[in-house]
Length: 175
Figure 1 (cartoon, rainbow, N blue to C red):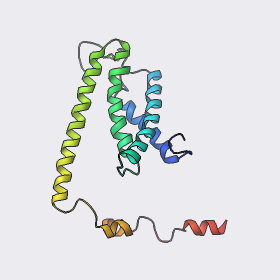
Figure 2 (cartoon, rainbow, N blue to C red):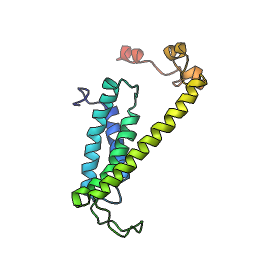
Figure 3 (cartoon, one colour):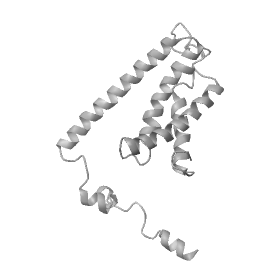
Figure 4 (cartoon, one colour):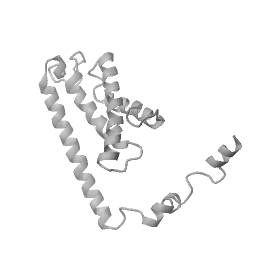
């Protein structure tokens, strides 16, 4: 409610998804209490970053996919280096327990930071190359007139919503 001024089901669902995304990486290394904290932080983080991406960066992300998956994916990876409590079995035969900075091992957070930066550089680099090629081929964007009239028919070959669906104005008129 704090970011858009009202309760928004889309933000609520994205908060749930963000919590799930954020706990994925650290799930084997944290206890239930830490999982709740991570999910709570992720729920707030997704709302704040959705507004930031839209209003400050002016990037069109209508469903908040970057905030849910990108921001909270990286947050989850970093959470291993923050919240890992050292009690998980040594699945990878590392020879030492995985502990985050809250449990006395800052080295794990450094490792997670390196992994996060590597993932960001790889994702940005490959995306930049791909979208540059698509732009050079002239297939990066839809035609402006199609963007205005709607992309259902030009891009998908059919309507997204069947024409027999009752319009919102008809529903309001019947009430």
